[in-house]
Length: 274
Image (cartoon, rainbow, N blue to C red; front, top):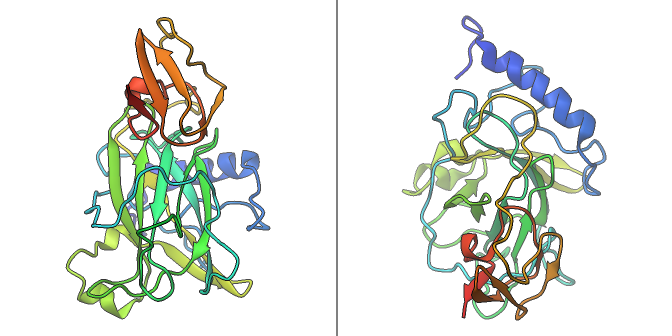
């Protein structure tokens, strides 16, 4: 943790990063002021550290249990709101970083959660959806504050997969929840910064993935040219579409636009060999 008596380069580096990302980030509709770097979404004048910090090379976002209610093939969407859905509106924003504190573009993020009554939809895809980080590594999710599931504190599940990297399964938590003290799964490193705003709540969190990086400008995804086949970067695929890649056939599992690093063999969440 940073402190007043020993302010290392971490604070100065994050200050520069905030300025750089804030100057170039697109403004989500839900946030009039644009996305904030997680852990700056507070009302005090002291900028707290990233949680976890991402510039010392070994503090990664910790994994958590998947739980019994994950479902693959969720719809691609940034808003989980539906007509008639009760609950307090919640917007979660942040960035996904690699080991060198550089944003990671094209990260697949799959969210799922309980409704306001604490129940999960196991027959459809209510309060389930996936999205990808943009070119600046940012994401924005519009949903509701989850209810209390028996035996657990409030939480949101998420799976993340950077191009050509393993899947991280984890959970996000809310501050000052009474059940945080009794939930045996709860991890304080995964607490979001949350505030009341516009009749709802706004939260932020920055993920740090095990993506090797060296200090420098924002990364440009690279990939080996496809060794023959019909799969192509920039093509929008729908569930059920079939392609070939490296002399193998694949069927699409989730609607998405193909990007560098998302070749069918590398992302089983999107493609299944047939």
